Image 1 (cartoon, one colour):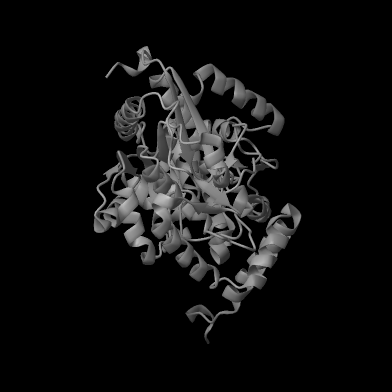
Image 2: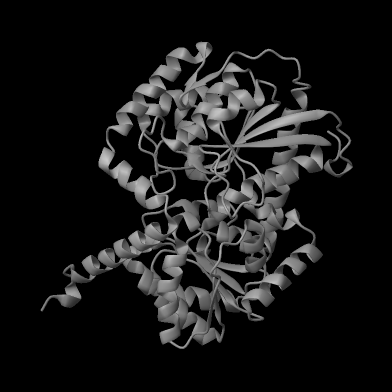
Length: 465
């Protein structure tokens, strides 16, 4: 293979990249940027076309266009060098109404990111590449379909051992690849990152040294304890806090406003990033943090990629953050109990040297090898112009393809069964609330208040006399 930097492979290549790039979530909006940059390093003329469940373009995106899966046949017409899945927790069969509020729900949104594209790749005899994906909620009724269409993948990378074990049980061979979010610093030159940060520092009056803090509302009754522990650590370290919303689809601004009140009461100086930043802008803020503490996996990974320190917080029932960070040997940076959070922050801030340097260097080498292999696959496909693919039709959102008829019928059957488990009233309510930012924020604030109230009223040993 020619060295990546020489970029001597000429000839047009087109890659269809599938994922949740239509969601206002920091991590999801990073993958297109990284994939495009890594492929462009190795191939002279490569076009990466983005496909998601919808074609909405979110404010966090640093790209101009996203196509809905329904547009795939018309947009590509079979002339594509490879299908690429990921990254993110895409191996799932669920439908998340707060991100994809739909009434009709023909397919769970998640199937549009991995299963349906994998099936179409098979029908078109096009190479399939899986880019460091993770495992989400998965209905085992889809296991046979997953095994059939993921097994032929030319390259199958997963981001943690949990996902690898799941695929092994299905008979699908995969390899663990560090999350490609670790390559974010390569998206710009050092001087470009500095310039981007300077603009934001002036706009928000960012302090010279700070803790970058984020948490999503799914922490529920633990949000207050999380904020109290972070405030204690910030006060002991003498550092101000910059509150950085990363998961806008989860209304992080609501949780950060709630936490800010607690910080202010404890005398901790705070700066709230109160507008939607693009992924590059957010990365610039994280790149200068003394430490990131939050629930976002990619908040931790991107901060770590700039050589900064991290403490990742998640509920004890959630394994995503620990599993992904374990690939780097950094699982000790994950905390599940807010009681120990303050000490973890203090210890991480006082640790000598650059604790993640060796792990980060190793991960970047592994990612370089992975993208070298990906480009080998894309290049080997050759010129796709003039090929006559199997006909693909999208009728009212339903995928139709003669070669896949039986399996598509099975997908539709399972999707119909799943849709019946979600009441129509709930789907309609989701459309009403989640398509309005103001209503969504008010609703999540009310839900959080009710959750906290219930937790406070629940009998505990300390309240039993």
